[in-house]
Length: 457
Figure (cartoon, rainbow, N blue to C red):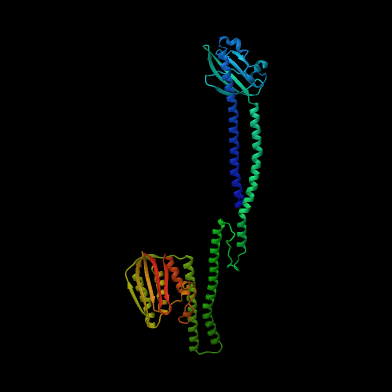
């Protein structure tokens, strides 16, 4: 139950409401009790002051006359309002008729000249609020005590508590209903969102969530989901293209092997013919092995399950090694390679970086024009190491520049020029990316291409 957003929201809101309502109830009861008791205390104070004024008026004949004093409600027998006057020797010198009729008295409490209040049990076993204050009359001290019944006040407080006990649960129930309705309406778009997501499969990855009509708070989620679906669709398309291209590139050598086997085995052959067939089969097998090795290599690079052997190196020395490796093929193709620039120190895997630069420079040789050239420049730019490889080859169409680093992707114009697997630049990008670098390409059809490899210094 507590695993859903709706249930958590309801529980949290109701918990907060419960705390607020309970605290409010106690606060209101406390304040009302203070108001009621304060009203009684003010009434008692006024009555005590009235009795004190009569006490002073009867100053000449105090004890004889005070027994006849009857003030307001205190003159009514059994009214719940009492007073008595106590001398300094704790002798009751006067009391209200309500006490005389009951044949009792208030508990004698030593008073002070400052009013004091307390709750007591009265003559009729009911709660009373008692006030006591001392006065000096004719050099004698008298304590005036006045008490009012708390029965009606307690009834008011009890009625108020009953109202709270009835109203607050009703408010709680109404709040619960309101929360249920609000959460239902608030989460309804999420239910729609979830339903739409559930309808998208690998067969309709091109579908997107329509942001129109969706609440403002859910629009970023819809945008993020649509972006994710776009990447997922692209990934599926690339995977499908990868399988198609891999099948195509592996199909050609396997078909050649099968053809050689079928033709060779169709009749008896001379030893030289068998040898020629085996050599051709071996060549095709090597080609398949290279393709498979490159597929495995790029899979390892992109899945980051390989480790780099990081060492300090001079990038110019690395490019000199690349130049030595490629000079034979460049000479055979009539291509001139030029290396220039400055020494730049970086950290990286020398073997992997050499492989990456060999792939780039080798492509520059393969797709170059006759008697063309390849210029390699080593330097730095804006705090990064920069290697520029420029050729005078056939160039790359603008629409194909973003995809040349995809696995098995080959420009259509290049297929008729050079045989290849379409994996070389994918491996280059993975190696450079693993070193925290990037590759940028500039090209113009018929004039050549320029690859710029940036690496951290």
